[in-house]
Image (cartoon, rainbow, N blue to C red; front, side, top):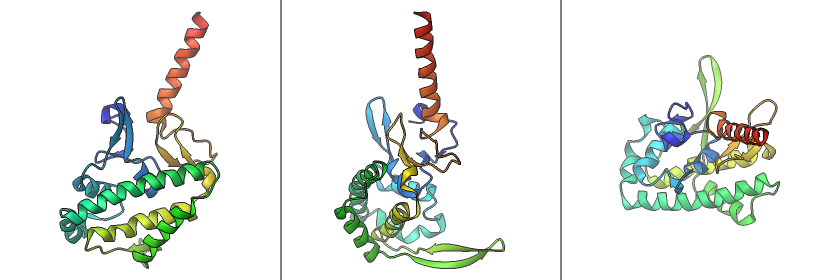
Length: 209
């Protein structure tokens, strides 16, 4: 996979691609395309743990208790449910990109997760600045739903839907944080250059014909 997307790309962290500018979108991007079809980047709970840390959703200092839970049947069940949720989240994001709200069923599911796994906030002083942080101390795999639900809530409520987009060349989704709002690809280093090279070669063939 690294060879396909560009091994030197800084968008890769510990084997995972982060081009979404938003955690819920980065979750969607744990399924990628290869020449043989889609590739699952979260095949097991070990990969899930690495992704959560690489995504910055949880620190390595807070992994002890829920790491043990991930290794159990509860962890396997959580990963299965997470991948199923990811599929429904993708459908909700596609609706947003089409100018439509998520379905009532999806919102009901999300609100259920938010009620069952609420996030706690704290105001902390770091580098002489006041910052809002999420207080998260999981002890079981199911507690991780708090992170997923909060990231999804933020995607739906804290972003401009018109800037949530699917790459024109692959299945990657991203939040366009550029000043002009004209981003078309998941990354210029990845799909952007590939599309431009293909367009250039097409123009050359037309000129030479």
